[in-house]
Length: 500
Image (cartoon, rainbow, N blue to C red; front, top):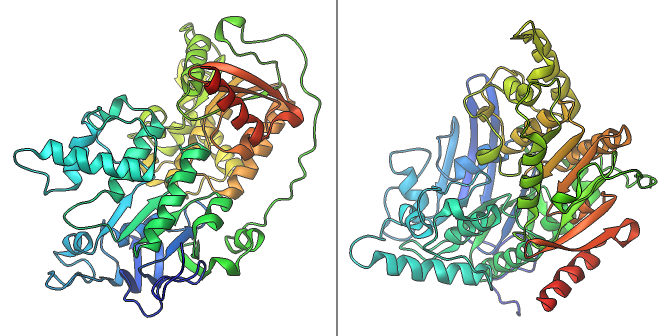
């Protein structure tokens, strides 16, 4: 695709002189004494993709919620570029700010999926697009949804009349993304994508990246939030770095390297110094009935295209290992959910109780939970895994999505379970914390703990001792050591498809 006068070269940051679709004028937000976003100037113009990066709790979600008119700024204003004749003005959080945001074509794809699980895909689209009413709305909704799904994710097989709760996590993510780009009464001009690829495999994520590039090249704009550095550099024209509620850098993507970007976020990029270790030996501790095998102290990966049976295999295995309801000091297996809202969090409980929930058997004294021991356990894991909070008694939903995921990881590791089952556990977790957790996993495995790890990130799969590649619900290949590469996994997946 050739350049024209209106479309900037990648890395230059949007059409020069174009009116921003949204801009901040000294905009800040405080929640009581907590300063979530210091007064900032920020703008997004047509034709650019702005990557918003920073560690969990840096203020990214607050900035996005201000753009999306979820709550008002404490100071300054949020100004939208409205089409001629649109009203109201849409500054700050006047009564029409939400209408102004909608009229400006600002849409959001949230990290925590906002779809109603008991409704169909079409009914969810109708909630977002209020012109879908009257006779024949289902046909019009189906046409819009089908067109958007096929444009963003060519070759998908998601039925538009399916109930959302019946779809796999990756399919739900794809539906929400497609809704963000779907045609409507107000065309999409700026789409906010918050960790959109966290539950997608590499091939589907590549489709999304290609679509975002095309969308911006045609005059649209995007705010893209991701902890995956390669993805950020692959898609962004401009990168805004947030730290402690401030925008500390806002420059063209070409002005950064991966190391300088991580340094700007406040964490020195770790060196790739993981020493190779001998593959654990010994008997299989899982049993042949599960199709998987693992030895004490081994890290076993599950890979392949998303939705081909990996999550189901982990669920069956965890159920088999944890279905003994007799009291025990430690469970046989612990579980780290990838879909935390559905499978992981106790949303009405505190952070402390969410951390301790799986290991209460070790905290009971004379039939009662030792609250002092529970608090000490939570404090220990808060420090070890970097949960960003000043109050462990605060509700779990007060944390950012990435910090909620850290709590689930801490919960599993805090048990005495010899087997840890992990279903894509690093969704939405920042690069610094990932490095810490990888070190913890290696140390725990070295002490004899076994990990079964399904991940959509190739960097994580490479950390495993052995990898089983899945296709159509079955294991088709087993890779070990240096044979664990992205090329080998893709080749194994498609060789199995050809055989089928």
